[in-house]
Length: 138
Image (cartoon, rainbow, N blue to C red; front, side, top):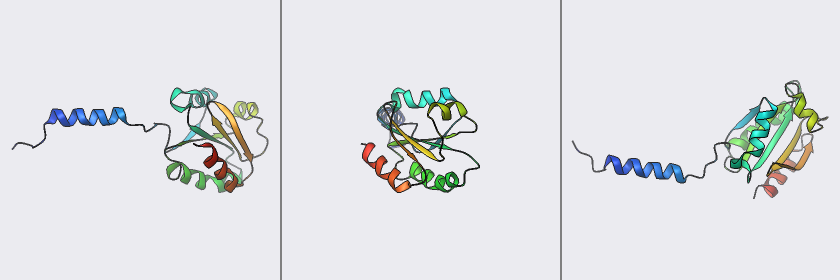
């Protein structure tokens, strides 16, 4: 039996759709940063230069950090899934990054744009963090 679609035409069309897609592979997920190099790569990549990046500095033992985590995960997969990159850094596993950014209170949230820090919030005021994300993401 034949098909009303040419296999070659549908393949070309799909390839064109994929190549023209503007979906950034770094969005719609929470990145667990394990090395300083990984952090630098994500914050300075050409694909992320015009994106807002939220970095959650946390610790496994930190109760307020654990309380904020579900909201951040929801944001990464829903409200901000196409225009904000979410990453988290365990300060106990990445003390060099924690020291570089002078993290002394947990959780601390740092927003980056074009590789530069543009906002910082220590503590659990997620309403304030959301307002800053909304202001800076465009």
